[in-house]
Length: 104
Image (cartoon, rainbow, N blue to C red; front, side):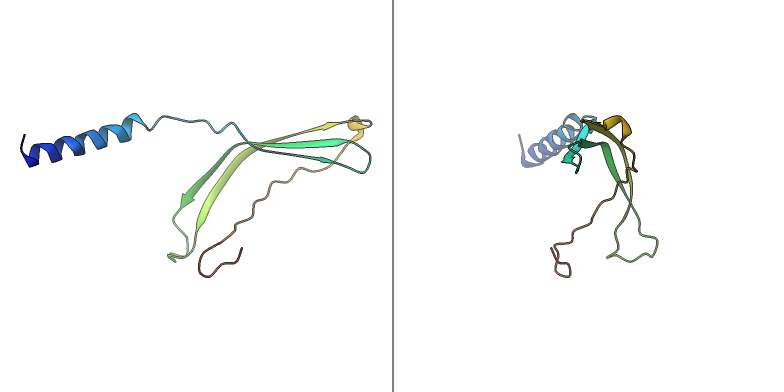
């Protein structure tokens, strides 16, 4: 086997492994946080199927990062008076930059 054949075989094997190893995955449960409020009730919030879809920045700046965020969230309240619990569930995220210009 000459060098050209070995090189083509290695490239073909590498490309094949890219497609074999790329299975579809489902995010499932991504994060869960529980807190106890002042009345002894436990509030558990779960975030499911989080997906960030990076898009080209609208300002065409190479340093800008923009994305669409999608996820599902559920909450559960357990304890005395849980049926009286009311509030608003808001999802937010924080971007932390650890690069040369950012701070952590």
